[in-house]
Length: 89
Image (cartoon, rainbow, N blue to C red; front, top):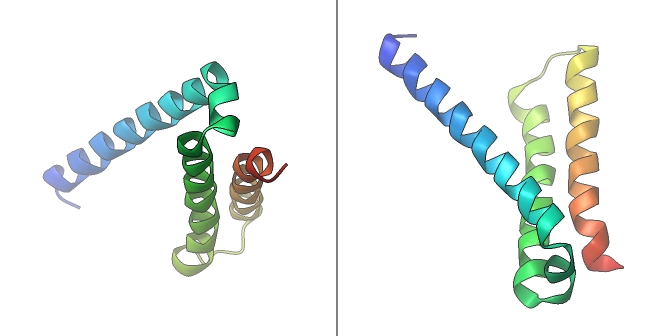
């Protein structure tokens, strides 16, 4: 992998970390709005779909029989469920 591709991947990873922290803050600060408004429910469903599809991508792109891969797969499923439960209940 050349230097430019390494830099692009590093920048993308840093931005993804920022996005996850931002989403976590939204979830903690705007708990009520996320479950009672159409925009909040749409956001929660979208995040659930994000984690569910991320779990599916584990099977497509990361076909490795390793305990850490299995753990991550379960964590992605838990993430999908945690975002969906407040919308359903």
